[in-house]
Length: 181
Image (cartoon, rainbow, N blue to C red):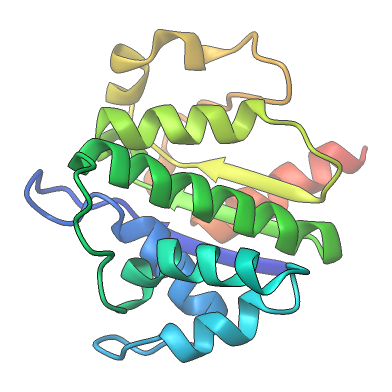
């Protein structure tokens, strides 16, 4: 099983995709400050059949692994952000078709609205793969997204009274054991 974590930045002027970048960089084996484009290509190539698909995914994901950003072509920052998030989403769905994947997004209550929308879309897009997304957040998240409190297909909300006593890895183990019962 593949277990990846990423922490959402607390400052609004930090990179809003830091959590996604940390997970993709860890999966590709990229060190901080390194241009991970070559490592990204090595991970993308076995997942997608056509070279055009590989090139498209790599160009959209490269900014997450320290590669050169895509050239500005008149798209807005929000459109570019949505495109990168969609590429990240489809990439990890493909990975999860081959082996179980757990993606743990920590401090999601600090995420931008666009990132939250993408995570919600991710959770709602059921595909035949073994992908488990854990969104660890403070209670502020439910003030911003009350619908995340429960009642969603393919999603469960767990509220912890003393979350400082539990690590994300421990939480995932508890949820895995509960799901297998």
